Length: 130
Image (tube, rainbow, N blue to C red; front, side):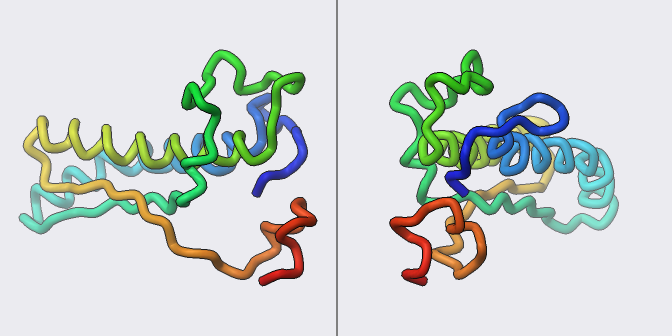
């Protein structure tokens, strides 16, 4: 969380790759199976994206797709916020599309609260306070 600039093995800014692209891919890989299961079982399906209230820290212009890998304008907290904003927007759009398709699956994003993990290791202002 809010880590120094680094690219993933796929050359995508690491926080965006880790926090959004991986989850987006997994969701899309499972979606057809979820749709089929929901239709056959006649039960509601749910997709939950763990987002963060930190989505509000995103860059003022939102997700900067054209500058995802731009190290010169990188801000660790804004990049983290951007990745979490992507989680929120993905869930919102997915719910909309599933509803339009008549599929009984909801997609939600949530803020789990502050959780004590090693994620704060890159932020000296926060590290050690939790």
